[in-house]
Length: 90
Image 1 (spheres, helix red, strand yellow):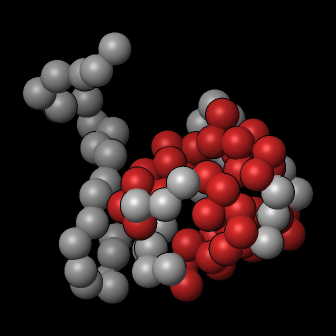
Image 2 (cartoon, helix red, strand yellow; image 1 turned 180 degrees about the vertical axis):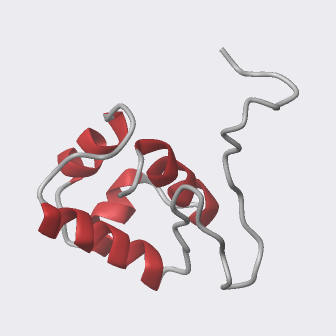
């Protein structure tokens, strides 16, 4: 599964907008907008989710699942879930 936060973060790392991601994935702009507006895990048609994840992978994004490790190397960002952050944004 991919979360809306992962999707937004992946786009930010690539420096692309929603329209560009939609084009890369072969889906509509409203589809990407709905995915990013989701709470928690992105919901949608499995084929569409696969297209978006494949497009992100092709562009160089490694999506890391909860409690999974990354062996791919390179730089990355992960949201810590243990509650030990220095401060939370509103």
